[in-house]
Image 1 (cartoon, rainbow, N blue to C red):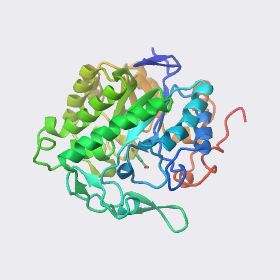
Image 2: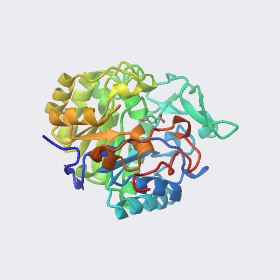
Image 3: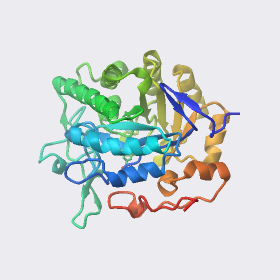
Length: 362
Ligand code: PHB
């Protein structure tokens, strides 16, 4: 039986346990410049007991942004800001991966001086861009119909991913995680619901996967395959891409195996109201990809232990419970009671609901 509290090798990195902090959008980067700051460093330092922290999605370019005050990883000031965080996590004995994010069409022209967000095709997704309301609180608004990326722009975006990976390395991260899930840009290329291109980036499964794999390859070239993982969300319904098929996930998994990627992070559909993943699919994924698999989505200790025992995952990622419990691994290990998360303070704001959840030792 594999314990959640036993070590795990993930590419070039040793995790001290298998409790992963899931990537969580918190929207507390410095406004206007999207630079990570000391408050964020304190939040992540508090959670360094995780075997691995995966940061909140961090945009690889200005056009990759779709929520206010999310951090970027495309310029020097942002790299300096991230160093505060990686230093704090490492000093506390933790390891940390930067999640590389491009939201594609899940955005709003107000983030881009009036310019349209970009996607695979000019097909809209409604009701999800998150702008700052007049009182500073998050407001969900319709996303405009995006502009389809040209082939030259796809190549330039691949370069943006590579730059972001170089920046992550420079900022002291242990790993990067490519966000190819949840209806954001890479997923918009994978799914027929959002990709109706008739060039080499649309149509067949292979064509729809081309952009993801070009981004993967560029990031590997920029750093090293044993530093690169990826997040996918087969059957996920979040952000409107309900048609996503398991075949694509298995095709991708085989490609990730060929490349020796450090991990695959499976965001399971039930966290956002989708179906439960079948164990039969988990077994197929295991067969297709030979590295560590992280499961995420509505995990508690029992779900994590069941899937670890069945050898269907190697680590379990916790989201909302990590928001509310900075010392979550300790609480899970000792059976301590958990603090309840407070959704009203998930997005934006300051310390309240961010760095003020109590740890057991407090
Ligand atoms: C969110 O802000 O709710 C969010 C962001 C990125 C994700 C999923 C959810 O991948």
